[in-house]
Image (tube, rainbow, N blue to C red; front, side):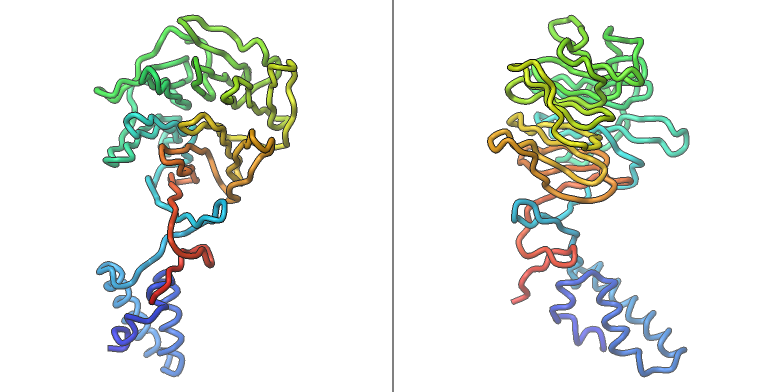
Length: 320
């Protein structure tokens, strides 16, 4: 068989199926009559699909290089429209996020267990758009169009708490208390010890907010990204980033995303490190192993360290 003779060639191991198709089509069809070319191409494509399903052809995932380490893309969830505001419960390895329902154009909250792949919608919340996890008390908070909710794992539902029920929650972050921002007011609040207050140090408008290990605030608005240094009582503009997500890893290090990249705030070197550039990013989270999870227009992806090289956006491994 024409294709079987080449099943062990490096091209089958290194390139996705469409590239193999073009390679073989060019090799075996160029000298045939037009009608015969069409028949041969259908034949080659059917054989390639059969081989791919059988695992004979290794269709490699996309890749990105971060800190000189090749990472391959693992698609965690597909067909979720504009996933946003990612938050991870490290205790249960459950990812929470909002997305836009295609039929009603309303915001919905969803959960995805990264161990079991159990996925579903969170019921009981109106216009769910934000979430944050208190990892010490094992409480998952959610924000809707009418205030703050608490998620119940047993029922996969959310119950509204008596916390600012008259505001639309935009974003949440938990560190020694629940921080959240509101829209369209763009104000930042702190809920702690059963009391709620507007964050006194943040007089600017705040859309997205994070808290560093030393208690300094990282926040963004239409003017860019800022760090509020409590020691000097002043907010410093650290860049004209259009931030759509701020998160921390299990150690409290701060990461943020923009529509075109993912970044790390390096306190030791006092700089912002660009981890990756990619278009149409909607949010970011960091799992317990330090792997980046990010949202695309219709999917949620995790980057996992991989062996090999990242060539033409694909992982290439040595064949021999």
